[in-house]
Image (cartoon, rainbow, N blue to C red; front, side, top):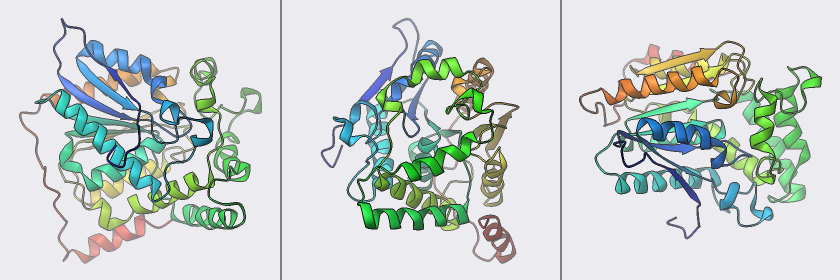
Length: 330
């Protein structure tokens, strides 16, 4: 990367008989790694897509030691991950020029992607946000205060089971205890176990990671930043109705409403009844992947990219933006 950091990137590509039809950059979630998306990468390659998926800083093979797991960067780690996403995507586009380019982003990676489309929307032709969430101002502010206090006494590289417990135990409390601690991820518990049995999916993040993520969450849901997204940028949001990260679709629907009220015209929401957080690992994953391909096909059929320049909404429409500000409150 531009700051000298080594980032591990994985690639899936069509065989020689299959022409390349599009490019996808994947942004994975927290406490996981890019190769968990191997099956998805193979499916994309069969359809003619090239997929690049890098392990974020502090994750997967990018973390050169276990001590690096769960730590992003010394300064503004969230923004550094956003910039990593852009650098890898630019390499993808340079390697395969002339093709439409999309981002597929899951969970923490979807928050990174939300920031990306606010800062660099002209770099891509569309974005898929999976397992994402909209604004939760009060919760984030409270968590940020707690994180600061813990860092004050333990340092930014401390691994806090308290923060981890507050983050994930609440997610799992909605489900039967007999299903185990990962019940919130998917109804297909065996499939999740098969792809999660590694230190890359079991470490406790540092307090700095939580602080960086919370800073990013506050940033991406500021109205002035959301308004930088082009009105015609295609965005697909997919969410399970039993996904606690999106508050069982509540905050996801809120985000869709905010996007549309800023004037975005190409926002699509698809929800899956009974599905949990990891839609690509769900019992209905065949349906989910089919819907993703259908959306991508629609975008590829567009004659040309539209709305590359971010258009700010009219400042004079006070009533409209007063309503938007209300939506951004809890």
